[in-house]
Image 1 (cartoon, rainbow, N blue to C red):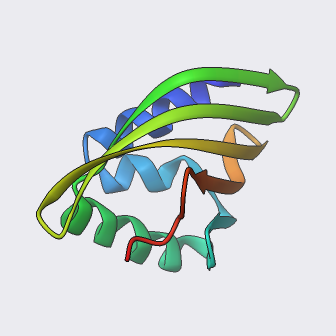
Image 2 (image 1 turned 180 degrees about the vertical axis):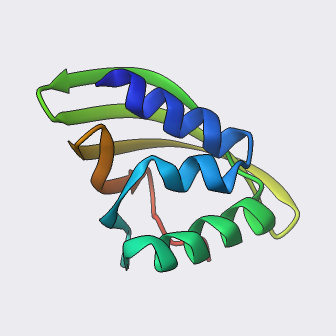
Length: 114
């Protein structure tokens, strides 16, 4: 199960939107801060914007797998308003049929970039 998250992070870092989306169920839910997206169309919009505007990369620091649940501590590096920033984040994932069915992401400090 940890391989599913490793593929997700690799696709994210490669900015391979098709590979990233292939790792989600059709009805996937993604929650970051106050942002909630549901389904492939909304996931596409969310990740396309992040990949082109924030230029993020993720590094997996720790993973804990329990059946179809994965908890991950990650480091996120991104550019916001021309400034390079680094954030510790935690992600809690529910997997189904070899894909991410839901995720809740917590960025240290605030999930909202203001």
